Image (cartoon, rainbow, N blue to C red; front, top):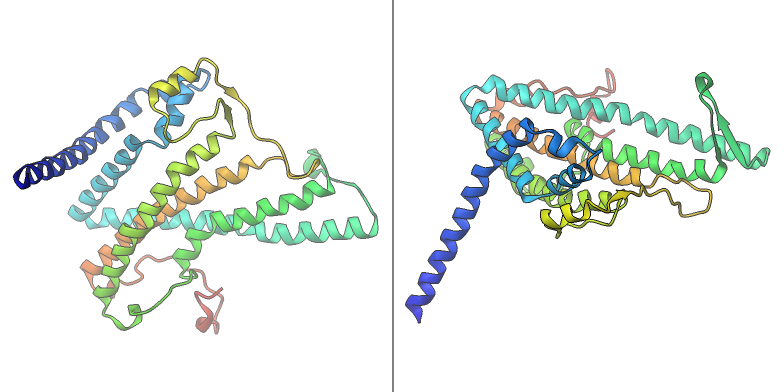
Length: 309
C-alpha cells in the first residue's frame, strides 16, 4: 500500500510538471498563431470570432502566453542589460503618462461638483447642458452628480501605477528600511513576483468575464469551455449595460468595468517594470538606485515632501 502511494505521488508530480512544461511550450505556439490569424479573434462581425476573443482573453492559454513573453523579455534583458533598462523606462513612462493625464479628472470632479451645487441650489435647474465647440451634451442634474463617481474611479484606477512610480504609495515597513541595498532589491523582486503579478492575473481572469457578462447575452463565465462558447455564438448579441441606480442617473456603468481592466493592465506592466528595476539595481549595485527614474518635483525647498503628495 505504501509503495503504491509513493508511485501515485510520483506520477502526480510528473503530470503536474508535464502540464506546466507543455503549456509553456504551447504559449509560444498560441502567440504566433494569434498574430498570424487575427481574423479568428478580431473580426467581431463574426460572433464566433467575438466569443473566441472573450474566451482567450481570460484563459489559461493567454496566461501562459504572458508568462512566455515575460521569460523571453527577461532572457534578452539579462543578455543585454540596456534592453531591460529600456523596458523599465517605457513601462514607467506609460504609468507616468497615463497617471499625469488621469489626474486632471480630479480637477474636473471639483469643478463639476461646484457647477452642480451652484446651478441646483440657486437656479433650481433640472438639466445641465454643456456644448464646447458646438458639441452639446444635455443630461439631468442627477446624471452629472452620479458621473462624479466615474471621474473618481478614473483617478483611482489610472493613477495607481503612477503613484507607485512616484513613491507615493503606502508602504508597511517592518524591516525594509534597516536592511542593505541588495536585501531591499530582493524583497522588491519577491513582492513583484509573488504578490503583484499573481494577484493581478487572478483578478484579471474574473474581471474579464465580469465585463463581458454586461456587454453580451447569453452571459459567459470563467468556467465555460471554448466549445460551449462557440455554441453560444449562434444566439449571442450585444446587450451593453446602460441601466443606472436611479431612473435618470449615470447610465454607463460598464465603463467602471473597463476601468477595472485598465487598472489591472497598469498593475501588470508596473509589476514587470518594478521587478526589472529591482533586478538591475541588485546587479549593478547601489549607484544604480533611481536610475532613469522620472519623478515629479514639488519645487525647490520642498524636498522633504517629495513622495508624499
